[in-house]
Amino acid sequence: MLTEYGTKHAVHKVCECLLRKGPLTRQNVKRYTELSDEQVKNALLVLIQQNCVQAFTTEQPDGPKANTQYVVLFDNILHRVRFAKFLTILSQEFDQQCVELVQGLLEHGRLTLKQMFDRAKSSEKEGKSDELLVEGAFVLKHLTQRCPASEPLLMPISEEEGPARKKGSKSAKKIGEPETIEQQVVEAALPMEAMRFSVVTNVESDVGEKEKNSNNVTPGEKRKHDVLELDECGVADEQSVVYRANFEGFIRRLRHKADHVRAHLDDGAANVLSAMLQATSSAEKKVKTKNSVPLSLSSIYEEVIKSEAGRNMTLDHVRASLVQLDFEKIIEIAQNEEVESVVSKRYGRDAYRIFRLLSKSGRLLETDKISDTTFVEKKDAPKILYKLWKDGYLLMEKLVVTGARQSQFLLWKVNRQILWKHVLDEMFHAALNLSLRVSYELDREKELLNLPADKRTGPLQDRYNRIRKVRILLESSQMKLDDAILLFHDF
Image (cartoon, rainbow, N blue to C red):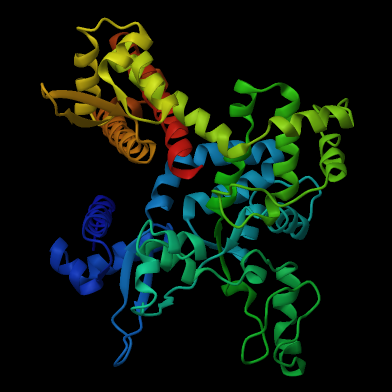
């Protein structure tokens, strides 16, 4: 039997294997990790339970279905470090009972509705019924969802579809096809929209009545207080339906915060944007949405004055604020400022002015032109430009002019599409280092942290205070770094 740390070791090896190798069958995972079949099976079950891995099969053109394969859900792994942010968002909109229910989903990965009710019963309630608690907090706000299909079937890609499925292709973007295997699997596993956010209420009463009514119910019918479709026998198994947190819903709420607007526009614009996003959030199908659902001016105004911050705004003020709003541009400005801040801290003020000039111009500029415009010494400009180019922040092109005397000029440019990927990769690297440092510090002082408070005296208390400060500093840095990762990866 595996110990707790043995299980953690197996889960780590299996997850790392899938991250490095891509989708694999269970037998191939066993071969690459050199774990036993039972260890691989248990590790995969843990990863699936925590929404970190998805199983799928692929239909073969000639023959039966292929073996089941497993793919890592990279975004869901990233979301695990954001659970504290998710709970903070939840606590701002709902009471503590709702927070505890969702906290259970985040901790355990997946729960049936009965398990959620049992958790709710274990804590005191303030007169609120279980049905209202779940239906109001989850269905209307889309913060939980039915779990995806356990093993979706991926259709083979034909030669005509092949080019459209290639990552980054224009046709793929145009028709909205998933770009990677992971995205295709996630898309295939999602329940139908009508079922994805539906929930059963009156669990206890329905379960008690199921056996009485099972012979009188026809397939396809719905019972009162029950939004589940019935199974082939005519009875819906409410207790077997499994739910998980809807990470997209939480990430969308993080994106909807108007912090970036307030940094560049007035409070009125921030209030108008928040109201618009709130009014259209239920209709959004994905996190990276360039345009909101169309709203009339009167609808926007009605939504604005619902909030305390926008109660005193006039219709003319709302109209003027709308002129200023361009959400895609707001995110782009925030991304630019984040990279400019990195350049300034790492390379100095002269490098910052050079990078800012090239970023705003969006075209190739010659070395002397850059030096003259930014007032950087001509002898220093080439060194700074070369350093930025070497570290992946700039693109360089050589221009050779022939004539009576051949001359060579160096041209420099910022390519945002390439640079943003480079910056995001650096952020992931920094996040990994921070995570490893936190683990190292906590593991080194594990015995001290487990000591009762009355046993920590003198030097031990000093060590405890030190590790507490280090932990707060490192975890605060992790949260700030994750804000930047959200900006480039999720928004």
